[in-house]
Image (tube, protein in one colour):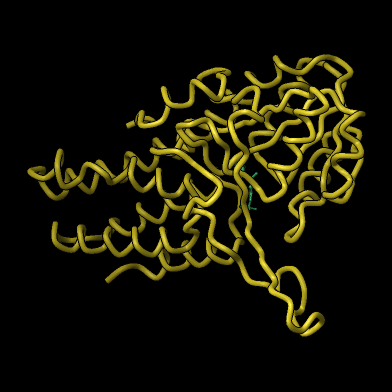
Length: 304
Ligand code: RUB
């Protein structure tokens, strides 16, 4: 029997109580751990794992970080670990989860350090949505005693920009808060666009919060560097293109009560794809790369 705590983890991801690709990955890892803890036979372990994987993957089908985490933690169980003693196998999975969680947090810190090197004293940057990796860059920039200001978009329909604004203000960073559609208007006032990502394709395209694509296009036109920040476990084994199946649609009610505009076809994709041509740099825990170099990272194994 799969623990109700695994269901709880999946529910939290599904209801977006856990948000942001990195947090989603760490929660999914904890779900994997919960599913094997307390198992008493190899059969029970494998069955629980299969159920947990299904529950977790269905909780947020568009989360590349979740897909990759499940693969990293359990992908080789049938092949490489097939012969292993049951209790050793259980121990290995638990150890992997703990290492993954620890290393993924370290990755965010490294991204902060790497990204802060790209910020000059006095810069104003614009960001979209909420990204722990972006906040980590801000923390490292503050430690380096460089001044910066941030323009934050509210990020419709779920308003993750409010969280970003609050966290920046808590750190004493000057914040200008704008509606998403004002991003183009204010692009002339910034030195850099920096955003988090849900996934990076091996073609260097970026799966990120809806609205990132138009912001990156405007930045490109204004010759503002477009910088994307992501851990290597978000690199997708394949190309990401605009019709990718990973972009599922969310409920219309997130945008408006459909009764207010009867007859309208309300669409609510949560992510869009920014092509590699609109991206200048990708900051990872291993260093700063160009989008063309993404294929060298895709397919590599994180940690284990
Ligand atoms: C959050 C979002 C974030 C990325 C990166 O969307 O798109 O920018 O996931 O976040 P949602 P992080 O709120 O829909 O999950 O850098 O924290 O992994």
